[in-house]
Every structure is written in C-alpha cells, then in structure tokens.
Length: 348
Image (cartoon, rainbow, N blue to C red; front, top):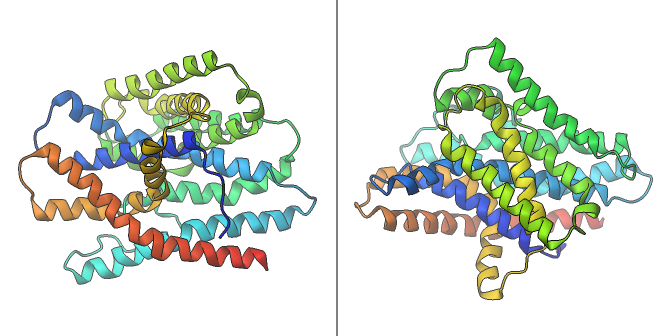
C-alpha cells in the first residue's frame, strides 16, 4: 500500500479536531459537570471546521504537486484516490445505520436515496446526522480538481480560492437578510451550517494555505507563535461567548472567523515536533479519526440506552475510549483493504 510521510503537526490538528467532536457528543450523555468545562465541550462543533481546513489543505497539496500535461488522467487518478479512501467506510456505515440498526430494534429514522448521492445536507437530516460534513467534502472532491486544473496548477493564483471564502460569507449574509432562520441550533444547522454553498470557508482557506505554503513555511518561529496565539483566540473566544445557535450576524461571520483562525493554527503547528511517547497515540487517533467520526452517532445512542452511572468524568473517558475502539476494527477490516485495492488499481 502506498505510504506517506506523516506530518506530526497535521496529526496533532486532526487529533484536536476529532477530540473536539467527541467531547461535544460526550456532553450529550452526561448529567452535571463543571459549567465552564461543559460549555467548552459544547463548542466542540468547531472541530468539523478544523477538519474542513485540513481537508482543503491536504487534498489541494496533492493536486498542486501533480506533474505532466494529461489533466484528465490526473483528474481520474485524483478521484480514484479520494473515493476509494472515503466511500467504502461511508457506505459500510450507511449499511449499518439502515440495515443492522433496525434489526436491533432501532429504526433508521429517515431512509432516502439522497444518502447514496451525498445530497442529504440540502434537507433536514434525522439520522446519520454527522454525514452532512461528508457531503460538503464529496462535493468539494468533485469540483475542486476541475477548477484547479482549469486555473492552472503552476500559475500563482492563490487569491482565486479566497473568492470562495467571500462567496460563502456573502451567501450567508443574503440568506440571513432574506429568509427566516429558526432561532435554535437545529435552525442554524439545517439553514446554513449543513448546506454546501454556505459552508465552504474552511475548505477554501485550506486550499489557499496549500497554494501559498512555500511562503509561510519559511516564516520565522516568532511569527508562527504569534499566529498560533491569535488563531487560538479566534477559534475559542468567539464560539465560547456565542450561543450554539449563532444568533444574529454571528451566523454570517462565524465560519469565516473559524476558517481564518484554524489556518493560523495550521501555520503555527505544521512543523511542530512531538516526543515519541506522546506522538504515537496522537498519530493513531488521527489515523482512526474518520471511523471515530462516522460511528460516534451510534456510540451516543448506545450510551443513552445503557444509562450509565453518575460519575460524569468517568463516562466521558469511557465514551472517548469506546469511540476509538469501535473505529479501530473498521479501519483495519474496511479502510485498509480498500486502500490496498486502490493502490493495485493505480499500479495497473
């Protein structure tokens, strides 16, 4: 199987992203806990925005490295690489949700063919809710390489990708001014957060960072530390002090602020070196993060069904470990075999 040199800074960011998401979900199965800590868990939804920046950066870095004149051959290879990486586990999870879960007495609450074509994020999702972010990424995988090859891989047109950030910002502003948003977390989710054209900020910023990385990789350590501090402030202060349902104009500017803040953290942490006893767990959690994300909805239901004890801190730890343990076998028995098959196809 094709191997890539792992970048510890990116693994750390992926570890942070999935940890934020898991802690958000853990907050749904606990009772009482320190209010400040509980509110911190509740801003775990920003982990998905960090995933978007990472996806844009990693995928664009691969595309911008492409050599040769055969654009369509490169495009075909890109799609094979991405879809054999993302689709097998997604459809396996969808099978579990739609077939296995009902057999255990928990009906799938919303069967729709939209789930087969990644269109469920354009309407209300009542089950397998976390798939909304995969829809945005899959739409990105279709459109981005076509645009990249059209603009020219080698030409310095990094500013073009910022237009997608501005476009999403203006689209949300238009929606906010012309349509009624239900004043709740559900309202903001299905009106703006889940819909592709309203949430491209993070992915587009990631592409911009990939296009300009030859510049910022050489910035001084002091500049990177400063950007890390500013980025940390942006992605913690504003979500922490704003209700989850993003009232008022916060529903317009929040995703753009998060995209900028996480891009700053990308610059700050990209080349960070982590000592081995700590780096290995981070690397493995990052490696299994896709499965952890996909299965976390079922882990929530399991914990609701079990109604565990009152030691909420222990429950959080058990919830995190359970999420990891569920993801491990599907990585080794679903993801890895299909990656090997993908590499065989590419070799031919």
